[in-house]
Image 1: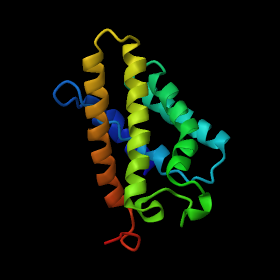
Image 2: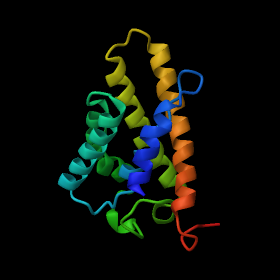
Image 3: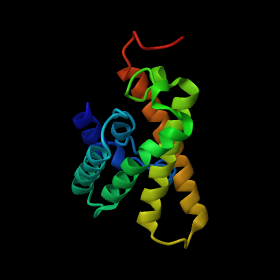
Amino acid sequence: MGFILVLAQVIVFNHICLFNVAVPLVFIYLLVRLPITLSVNWMLTIGFFLGLIVDIFSDTYGMNTLACTIEAMMRKPILRLYVPREEDLTRPEPSMYSLGTATYLKYLLTLTLLYCSLIFLIEAFTFFNPVRLLLRIVFSTILSMALMIGIDSFMTPQSEKRL
């Protein structure tokens, strides 16, 4: 699934820009769904190489690498904001089933907002046009999150889906 998602990001989603502000960044779904039991070193390594692969095929000069590495580092502390004890998880992989719908959506929103903020701040590297920067962050977060929820509904086995 990871290969397909990165390929879709590079070939399709990188060329979509709705209303000249919203860019879907769905490949971060791979970082969101990695097991929480994974060590920090593995998370940072996966985040680094995931961003590097997207950078290589998108000519973005390390922007995704930096943002993915920071996101991988912040993933566990963000999850702890919403789930204080890891024993409360029914499965090690964060999902609507293991966290509950409301908690999972907050977790997904926080990580997506973090990534979109990082990537657009790195890209702009200035606050010259703060309104446009804010619009890009907000609408890219909404678009990316909607697409990731759609992907999640297809990827979650029928036995795990809640009513």
